[in-house]
Length: 259
Ligand code: CAA
Image (cartoon, rainbow, N blue to C red; front, top):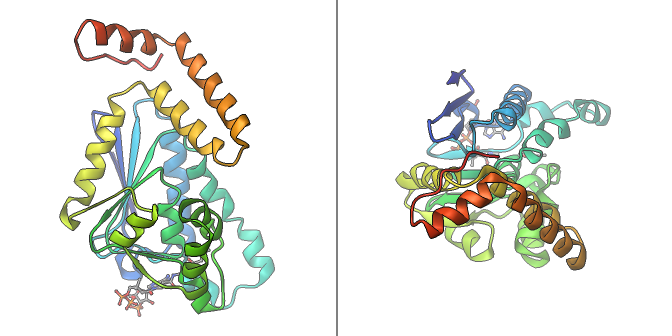
């Protein structure tokens, strides 16, 4: 377990990592320090073979309020370019383990974009999502236009990003951004339960499923189906695949070893 003031990390015995943002005075706004911590944490979790699934969460009232706007008051184009914040996001994108966002309260701008870096989004019923950058004379810059487009389609995305409207959890679920809505007090527990279920399966199968699903959505259907077929075939070379099938016929729980 490693803790520091703006981000905490706890890893359970079942292999579930809980990452929690903690910058309440700035509504978990993603300043450079928090971005760096997030990036280092995801690199660490990617490499830790005991970690099978990751839950990322924020506070009770705010998941994350987006980029730290204080950083924007005097920033110039070249300064923004030289920050290369894409490298921090990339550590999350590159993480091969399933990521579940447990969202309570506001997930705005970069906060909504952070949730969209997850593979599953569990929202408390009071959660609100939005890309309000347009209100600041800006636009989403960490995947907001593109990830939202792929999740909810052009016409909802345009409404969100051009008006900066906030969307409640139930509506976001109907649109396909949120996987499940639960009572606010159950958000983290429910996300952890899903993570525990995933952690009980073969990590190789789980990671192949994540990789193929994410890569496939930007390929042609034919290319994506070939990718899926090859990944399916590769799994037949794993001990876990034989264990899974044998355990089914022996009517016992499978013991996956990640090989
Ligand atoms: N950056 C920096 N500070 C922020 C912040 C942000 N994104 N959001 C809130 N804060 C600060 C406020 O300035 C305030 O500080 P002080 O106490 O020093 O005045 C403190 O947090 C509390 O804020 P509020 O009083 O506004 O808190 P609230 O609970 O009433 O409202 C909120 C919460 C709805 C999240 C509101 O703070 C808000 O709308 N924040 C801005 C959201 C936003 O515009 N996000 C987009 C940022 S741009 C971006 O994200 C670009 C990108 O990804 C590339």
